[in-house]
Image (cartoon, rainbow, N blue to C red; front, top):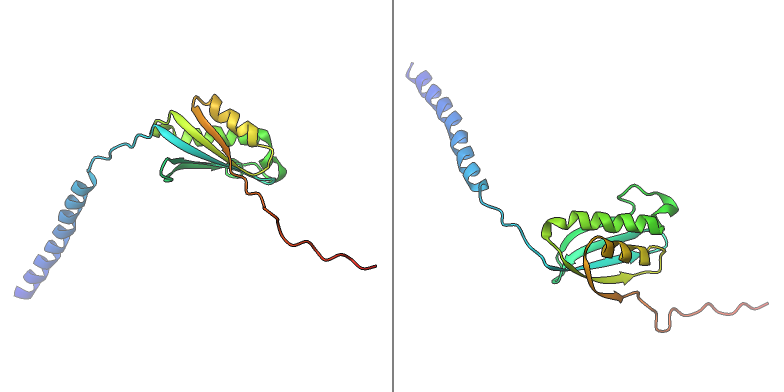
Length: 151
C-alpha cells in the first residue's frame, strides 16, 4: 500500500514540474522586443545575364532583407529582364519597410539588363538615393589567351 501511494505522489509531482517550467519559460519569452530603426542603408544589386538579386544592408553590413527574381516566380530568361528587376526592388523595399529606411546608397555589380530598372525602382519606392557606385569586377589583364592554332 505504501508503495502505491509513493508511486502516485511521484506521478503527481511529475505532472506538476513541467507546468512550473512552462510558467518560467512563458515569463522569459515575454521580454519586450525593441524594434530596430535604420535611417541609412545600402543596397547591393547583382545583375547578371541570368538573374537579378538585391540585398539591403545597414551601413555596417548586417543584412536587413533581400530579394531575387527567381524567388518571385520568374523562370528562365525572364529573370534577367528589366521588369523582373523592378519587381525585385519593390519586394526588397517591402521587406525592409519595417526598419524605417529613408536614405540608401546603391552598389551595382554585373552587366545584366536590370541595372537601370532596379535603381529607378528603388528611387520610385520613396527612398532618397545618396550615391550610386558601380563595383563590377574588371580584369586588369585577364586570363592567359589560348595558344594560336597551327594549321
